[in-house]
Structure formats: structure tokens, C-alpha cells
Amino acid sequence: MSDQKNLIIAIAVSVAIMLGFQFFVEAPKQEKLRQQQVAQQQAQTPTAPGAAPGAVPGAPDASGLPALPSLAQQVDQAASRDKALGETPRVKIEGKRLFGSLSLVGGRIDDVVLPEYRETIEKDSKPIHLFSPTGGPSPYYAEFGWTASGSSVALPTGQTRWTADKDVLRPGQPVTLTWENGQGLVFSRKIEIDENYLFTVTQSVENKGGTAVTLFPYALVSRHGTPHTDGLYILHEGPVGVFREKASDGGTLKELSYKDLSDDKAREYDSVGGWVGFTDKYWQAVLVPGAEQSVKARFTHAKPASGVDRYQADYLGGGQQLEAGKSISATSLLFAGAKEVKLIDRYEETHKIAKFELSIDWGWFHFLTKPMFYSIDYLKGLLGNIGLAMLAVTVIVKLIFFPLAYKSYVAMSSMKKLQPEMQKMREKYGEDRAKMQQELMALYKKEKVNPAAGCLPILLQIPVFFALYKVLYIAIEMRHAPFYGWIRDLSAPDPTTWMNGFGLLPWDVPHLGPLQILSIGVWPIIMGISMFLQMKMNPTPPDPVQQKIFALMPLVFTFMLGSFAAGLVIYWSWNNTLSILQQYVIMRRMGVKIGGGAETPDPAQKPPAAKPKK
Image (cartoon, rainbow, N blue to C red; front, side):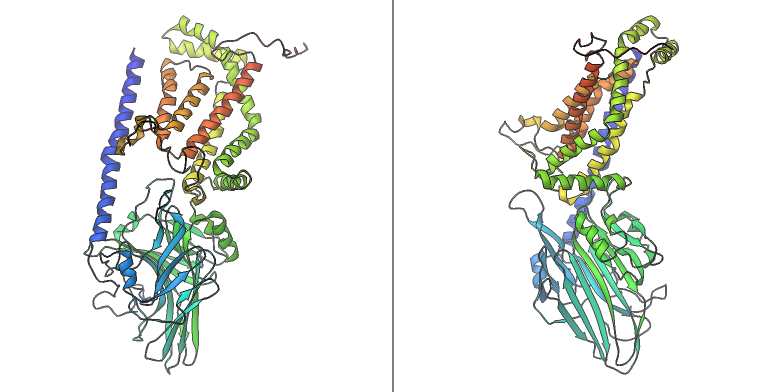
């Protein structure tokens, strides 16, 4: 009776903790994010950034290096995106996989749209807007330029009006921006785009005057407003970069959260090559200096009076001496687009970008997660559907681990045979658990049964399950991938729910907030049934409390996985089904009843040959 009481208390406490976390932690967190987004859209300030009051552009900072454009005075104006785009002259961007424009005021790349990707699976859904200009909601842009130390030379800023040699930027048709400072320096900026998401920006300065000057090239990505993130431990979203101490170094990955920067302390890294920027779940904006270029990279944050946070990822190159009659140049790459696995890998190889593949968060099980993705992607090409490819991979994994699984299921079947004997022990020793354990160990030793061997299939399933979970969660190739029937997006939860008869009843079910976990669909229920059937085939735990806990596990997992990606639930259901079939065949061959105990072996099967006596 005390065991049952303890079990009920444990379940009640667990449910209370889960609901309390949703109500008192997650709900306020989501409300805070919503309020931040509202504040961001209501901020009213100038449209372009400027230097801090009294500061001289290019004046050295505390480190003695020339300062980059300041974040502290950059504040957004509440205007529509279209209105903000219309307030400055622009050069159109017509790429094969993105479109948008760059502003001739400041020479920024601040308008990038990804037409192949939509916000939702609905046909009228808007395309993904990655970059947006200042003067509108959520400014996000890339800027390039030069700065100087201890010099009064006029340099281009965020307000500089450039002249373009073309009206449209296309692959194979670069655009060159030019500007003269009136002191003999001619600045030019050649911008190219490839057939995907990579911009190449080559900055040049020609000295037509008579005075030499030292200039430092820079590149930055500025992001206004704290973006919404999933906030899960398994996925990094935020400031990210790889930095190398020397050119031969493989590089070190640095991942920071937006909260990490809230103390307004710059995070600085000396690097040779590498890359720096911001990553989202499926998209990223990353700056890449030359592979041999020594730079000082950093992440910074500021929060002006408007209350809208500003984040910046940038790097500053080494000083270049510009003599009279000479010219200097610096080249940067900007990746602004979708984190497609094959494309990222190709850029890493062709442009020698150190560990660029890590911009996709493969996690600690990188060695397993990435091969899992490529296996699914390859089979998708053969089968025509990611869902079918995922099921095929499950079969292949089952075949690979079959020898180990076979031994494990044999051990579990042997345990199943001992159930009648174990039941007699429970009746004989009652509450004397010490004596019960002693007799059980003696029984296991006598029958040469390892009670822990049955755990092997579960242990084998865990890393595979986690790898598949990562692939479904992080890979953009899985985003909005359809299956069959009502599953139109394998990366989203099952859209059906028992609350409206799985769509048969004529009403919509509202989002239940923290209680959304109760709104489970068809596939989670199928998964729960398959898990129940599989557990019925396993040996019954000797401890009554363990028996009750194991009996509740299918129900708990049904609700827990109800909010997971449908692809993951389908995988688990399919894996359970294969395991049931595999275990059923082995148990039948060993003469074990599915419901417990032993049965008469199949007469059609020959009994195992007796071992000769020595």
C-alpha cells in the first residue's frame, strides 16, 4: 500500500512540476519576448546610425585600434518595411535563389528575401525576409568600409551617398559603388553574388592626393531587436564564429547567446581567417575574411533609450599603408541565406572556410547526426519522400545492429521463461526484499541469464533516436517536408487532435498554451499503442512499483511526444513495430508465451541438439 502511495505522490509531483514550469517559466518568457517585439516596432528615432556624441569617426577606442561604427546611437523608426525601402535610392538584387536590394546610402546590403522558403506551409504564405533596412521593423543588414586611427581623413559612413555603375546586381554581373572624399581618396566597392547565397565584396581605395594614410578594412552584421529563438539546449541560435590562432589551425567554435551579450562587454577574438556572424535555426548571416587575413573579430551589444537591443558581429582587418598614387584593397565574403547542408559543405571546401559546417549545429554526436542526414537525403532521392527515406534508414539501422539485438532479445526471452518461477518467489518471500534479491540472483546464475542484457536494444536506440531528432529539428531540408495523409510537415507536430475527433467534428481547437501537451494527434497515439505492445512482450519487473511505473510509460510518452515533430513520432512508431516483429519471432523460436511463461515449442522446429557430455 505504501508503494502505491509513493507512486501516486511521485506522479502528482512530476505533473505539478511540469505544469508549474509551463505557467511560471515558459509563459512569462514568451510574454516578455512578445513585449520586446512590440517595443521594437513602436520605437521612433532617426533612420541611420551615427557616431556617439562628440566622437570622431575613426577615432581609436580603448584598445588603441580605430573604432567601428557605433551601435549605441542606432535606433529604429517604426515604419513599414516597404516604406523604409522606398526612402533611399537602391540597386536591385536579382539572384537565382534570392532577391532584394542594396542601399546607395551607406552602401549596405540590407534587403534580402529568400523566395524558395515560406513562413508556413500555406500557399499564400510570405517568403522569408532575412535582411531588412533601418527605418523599418527589425533592421538587419551587412556593412563594409574603412576606418583610420588618429587621422582626420574623411571616410564613408552609414550616411554616405554612393554612385553605382549598374541598376541591377545579378550572378556574373557585379555592381561597383564609388565615392570620393574630396581629399584625393577614391573609394570603390565591387559587389558580386553567386548562384546561391554568397556575396563577394571587394573594397578598394585609390590615393590621388599627396599624403599617405593608413586605413583598416572592416565588415559588420548589425541586428536590431532580440530575435525569437526556440531556447532549446540542443540548438544554438545567436552570435557564432570560428576563430583561428594561425592559418594552419583548425579553428575554435564560439557560440554565444543574445543574453550573454547583455552585459555590454565586447567579446573579442584574434583570428587568422575564420568567420563571424549570427545564426538562426534555418538561416544565417556570416562574414568571412580572407583565409590568410589577420583580423580582430568581436560581438557587441548596446541598448539605447528606445529600449531596443542592438547586436553586432564584426571584424577589423590590419592597417594598410596607402601611399600617394597607389591603391589598396580588401575582400570579404558574406553568406546570407539558408543553411543547406550540401551548400555549406561545398562553400567550406571551395572557399577554404574553416569549419564552416559547424554553422549547422550538429551537436556532440556530429559523427552520427551528419551521416544520418546524408543517408536520409540519399534515400530520399531514390524513394521520392523524406518520410519513406527515414523509415528505410530505420530498417537499415535495424539490420546493422541485428546481431547485438538478437542476443539481447534472446536474453529477454530467457527472462520471460523465468516469470513463473519469479512469481513463486514473490509469493514465498513477500516483503522480505533482501531475501528476494538473493534468491533472484541465485536463479539468474543457475539459469545463466543476464537481467541487464534486455536493456541493450533501448540503449542502441537512444543515440539513433537522438541523431534523427537532431536531423529533423535542425536541417532545413526537413523543414516543411510532407509525408502522406494529414502530415504535411514532418518537422512540425501532428496537426490532428482527439479534441475534435481528429478533424471529423466541425470545430477548431484553440491553442491551449501550457496545456497544449494534452492535445495529441493520431501518430502519438499509434506510437503509444506500439510502445505498450512492445513492453507487454518484455519480462515483468520483479518490483511492484517498477511494474506500475513501466505500465505508465506508454501513456507518459504518448503525451510527451505529442508536441514533437511528426517525423520523430512516425520513426518511433515504425521502430517499435519492427522491434515487436523481431522480438515475436525470437520468442516463438524459443518457445516463450507472449503473455508470459513458457509454451510447448513448435513441433515443426527441431529442438536444439544436446551438447555431448565430456
